[in-house]
Length: 317
Ligand code: 13P
Ligand code: SF4
Image (tube, rainbow, N blue to C red; front, top):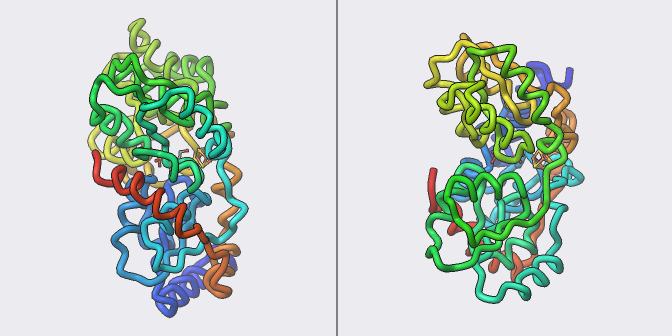
């Protein structure tokens, strides 16, 4: 049965035979996470992809993640089990739009979230992920203007933390995280007064979470704005018995594994990324059997994009 023990055994056998490593993002289906060699957030997986000794990387995640692996390791075969797995956030800015924006701000440093296409990365000075966005912005000389793209909520979070006035923010968003709404979060936080709140910075409700802390509805130290990898670290060290989680629901699987005694509840249990969920057990098996879908990035674009991605993986944790 697809997704069962025979399937997992066959996936592992084919991966060995192909000298492939299987990487899975924290939002993948539980079966995919459990069969993978490595599970992590965007930054951790980029670092693993850059150093992997295997000749093939099977990226169980969305297209920009597999593309980033290919940019870092052009000599490797990079496969994604379904190349239609896109990202609404990456689609919120095109290379042409970025060119125009840069023309309006000559001399500005371009910081792009890793959720962007290879063409956008090629026009970028430094990429970042949600786990190192603050460190990346803090590494730039204070008097330089910054164009931060494409996520408006992550941008607002970085601006709040760094206090940086010359940070211009693109108005993009992820439909999944933007849909986790502040009223829902506030109602749940009020009815679970002892729970921690773990909030991904792509959420529209990140501001509401901080507002709740500001008005004393939730103690400040219980509100944590974190990347998916940061949530796992926080789960291992929090003293809370219950945690309300504002991000894509795939995250609950790793959280429950990391801290089985904590009761993790999704703030919005409909927050599921349809792109992440295109990577089904059947699609992963097909990918290994057929050596498909292969990810290609043209050499010139990859060379330019590589610099911005390499700067990203050298900054922060
Ligand atoms: P992380 O870098 O926190 O894993 O987030 C990736 C992503 O796509 C969030 O929607
Ligand atoms: Fe993109 Fe949002 Fe899906 Fe993450 S959850 S891959 S940002 S659409």
